Length: 482
Image (cartoon, rainbow, N blue to C red; front, side, top):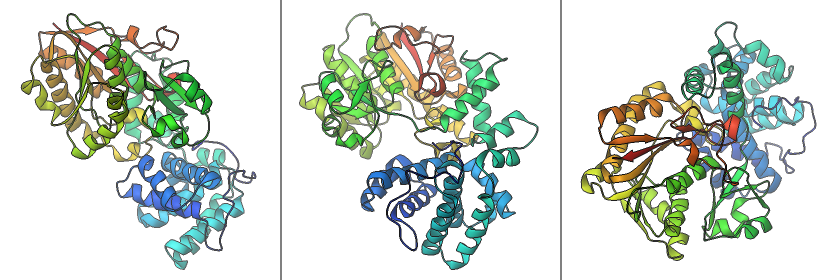
């Protein structure tokens, strides 16, 4: 895990088997991914591509993946350590060299890599991709870092005083994110003032843990026994969830064929809730307003088919619409009535007023609820992103309400617990209209055994959490059009 407390001198079971005088393919691949992420790529997309192109597999692929994700997650703490060891600000270190140092520090402080191997291999990487001059600097800094273990370095670099500033370094989150998550725990009714700081620290620590690989079994397309035979076990949380403890999800036939997919359980629970809310009158037309790349739509399509309804999956981007069509191909082949359209979701309400019975708005957001899976988001997002995002979210929700017929329902979901993107935005939308009733979403977030999922807040919206549910921090509000 990126936030582990293993000492640097413990022997590793995951060091790449193949080495070279310069560096090994796993470290070289991890470095290439970090450089691509620094230039705007996403780790979850870039890592498998780089491993495939570099022909890095097996234990070496697992090692490279941990290097990438752990280094990105713990960047804030590692940069503080590097500044101390190098006696200079990280802003004054070339970006290529800084990424190499971060990779070395992660091996020294948070992986079971012997100190001499971590230093020597990282210096070799620097010599190979940057040059001999920089490798001397990298060697000196990493040897300084290797003199202490993670706990000692953490105590050394975490500042005194302000709680949020301390948590930002200790748990490697930007300070504004720490404050936003603390406010969200209070605002959603998850934490009380007396417990919120301890709860916040649990949440921040969980963000730095690698999530389990969860599969969604799309109903009507795959049987439970097939996934069990592939090594997946049913989850107690989502009715459609299966945990894959080890192995490549792409090796599972049902995943390759689109009958199952990798999907966080929070997304599964939201899609299931959309289908479970009673509507008044007809129930034949469902809409996923901003559906790409299609995770929730893949489940909704089969739930709609089971209810005798059709699903329109709309996406503004042609590229993402192509991914959406691929995701939905198995459902279409099975006879589900699915229509993929390309258009701006903000226009649908005006173009097809009162045309749908159920509408899902899975709105673009800061992604602060998915920092385990998309660790680079914490370093890319800024508070200045919020006004533009909340304007877009408000416009999409308005369009969704306009597109819903009286008696129908709108589900508004974000993969962020930030209050500006969730409770405040929904409350504002309801205040502006006289034709909307807010439903209690909590009874519709249900476990595999049929019981309600606990600890989702004080209502009427529902908020899931990594540290409480083992899921992304997904928010759901349910609104009925009067």
